[in-house]
Image (cartoon, rainbow, N blue to C red; front, top):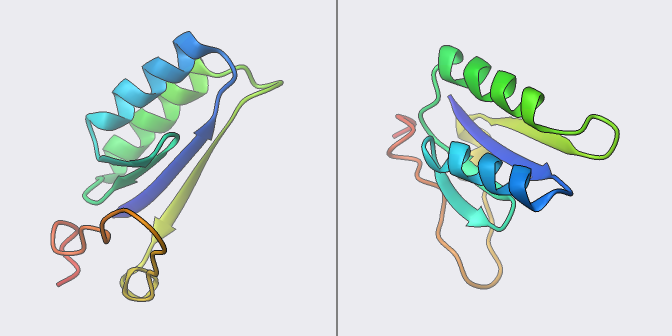
Length: 92
């Protein structure tokens, strides 16, 4: 499954931990946004569990956007960056 994961975490220490966690599963495309092209259900649940324990539920948030083949095909980019890794996601 291809996921776009973003977070808004106020504490630097926890934000750094979140980034390190997600770097193990995908590619950072913006400061708080990661593309994770090959997540299994088990990996997704692990990430959700770890981030859930990490954040302050009063001030922080993490969003998980599942991307289908059609969504990725309609990707548009303005400015610097790379296209989503569709081949890595198994969508080609």
